[in-house]
Length: 118
Image (cartoon, rainbow, N blue to C red; front, side, top):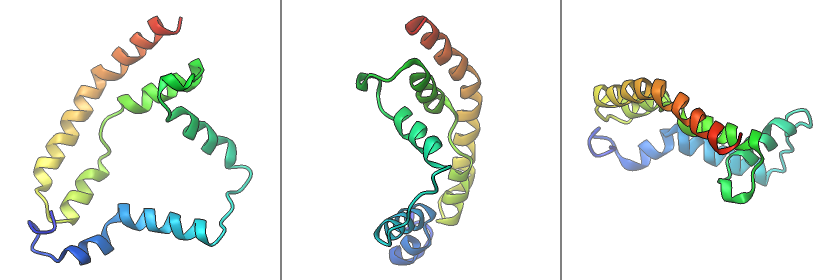
């Protein structure tokens, strides 16, 4: 995408929000950042729910995992694509399609889960 946008790859990497977030997290970890205790339960739940079912997740964790797997593509994908010089209209179409499919996908996934974990 950097080539398509006629920009240098190093400049795009430095401005990429995903890389900025990853590097920021790494730096915070290396500097000894400690998560506030009030935030730990939510972070633990999200982390536990992100594991696959063969890890022995309970019903609540499996439900949360399935919900997150069924939600549409983030609209920020359009912003990232447009920022990097990619075809923003194409990505906007993909995000819209993902949202429309999500209206059917989420109830279907929850129905499957209800049968799987009565």
